[in-house]
Image: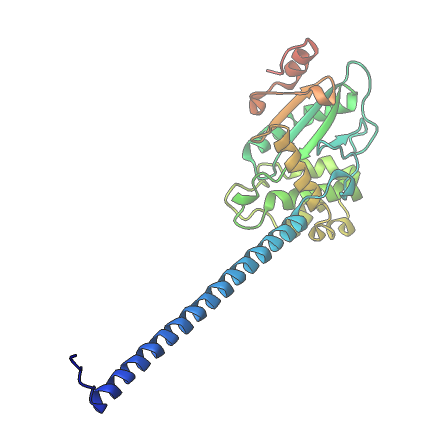
Length: 279
């Protein structure tokens, strides 16, 4: 029988060294794999935690910024769930409104930075007030924040609407005068400008007789939520632009005039009374 020669001691030592090195490499590889698995698990856990925290933050932000419901709002007098301020026959917000089978609802949606709203107010404002005082219509005014994003960071439309609502609350005799004042051609600001500051709004309000203790409240933003609510309701009602004028025999049956900027209000009322659309 053939006999294999024994490996010399040096060769055997080298073989053991290679085996030990191989075993050590496999051990290190297994240890690295386990370490990598732990890292992946930690990364997944951290990622999941970040998602959960982000979701919680989003929920909290939405809850914080959500416009309160009508019942929870700080509202001016004459406020309705439609976001309107109803003007009484005494031409004050919250005054006794006109009543009777022939009375029509006349609702006007406007934005204090909207130039077309300004021209419409200057053209129709005096006549609309006459109709409200005579009891022919129940006048409803909706002041919106549609153009906040085009007032170079000042949210002027809502700032002005808050000031007007503040006057409705604390100086109702001057409400319509202040509302009209902000639409005067030499006063009204244009889109993509800063609009007017609360200080300038206070000066204009003082010009129509609003006391200083009322104008000092403009910066408090007491009616910011009301303005946001009014704006949301307008969108819900299908108002896509301002000015918008709706006329109807009841609050829920109003129809929008297609061309509010050029509307002849008396002709529109006659058409609605006859069962037709305003224009």
